Image 1 (cartoon, rainbow over the protein chains, first blue to last red):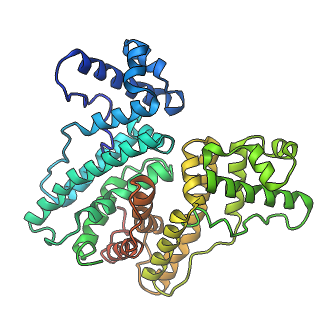
Image 2: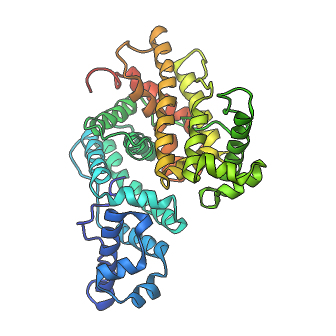
Image 3: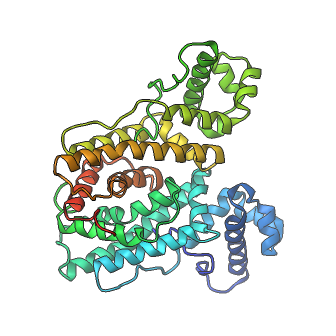
Length: 207
Length: 207
């Protein structure tokens, strides 16, 4: 989902407001985002993060231990934000807005979202952190389906997760797995495909 | 697509029939598949491949140079097979069969397909090789759509690639990106969703 990771400028590290510990975490995670986006997983080191954050190396090593620890904490912090899917007033509009957000996050230069997905194939800690973040994001997106049910656009027994995956998967597939150039029409097309399938009953019933 | 990589037992390395060079390539690529599937990208070394293949280290180093070279050649050999999508007599059947093949390839233990996708996030040569293989596989699958058009199941101006991506992406999304456990119903469900969307006109027209 979008916001598999919000863009770096979003400030998601605000769990414990104030305090030196919290400030250091914010500085370090901002530095992780910047290093990851600009240089990628291969170049990510605790030393480079400490230098960029202006934080003592010893503090970074003690608290985050290794690159996996940094990525896991970055993903946890990302999941602590207050992101919600847009409420556009229609199922098609909501799904298209979600896809546009995802496409923007995945094609940003640098893309933290793409870097974290790539990192999840290399670090088991990053993979676990990203799995939790995906789960959280899809859970938050279920409101798109419940709103559509309330508006009478979808039957009450619609399988929200399957509809959301159908609407969002083609975009990830093309950008992340197939690595094709971004198609500006795809966010709207994939949303429309899912809505048409939903209208034809694809996401209700036992199968 | 399936056969993003056929299972290891499939013998795809038969470009130059006969000859010592060809035999060595077959032995080496079989060893790459076995090492990759059992031990993963991190443990893949030319020495281990040479030992497993029973081929001189010097030969492997001279001809394949590094792990990227081995993966690129494995992917090229994989693309040289004669794989074709099954012809079941209906669009729904063909797409479901394709998804079942993909699910089997991605959940095999070990899964060469999953290992090659993971490797593509770590080696630029593997990424380029995999991109060519995806392109080749989706091109071969377009016959699923042209057969359906001939049978009158789809309008002639159906966008084959978009339909194929819609039908296959949810499975890759869940197994490769979200890393959720395999859902035995998903291959059929995703095929059915794409067929319902196609019947509703999702893949025709300019958008």
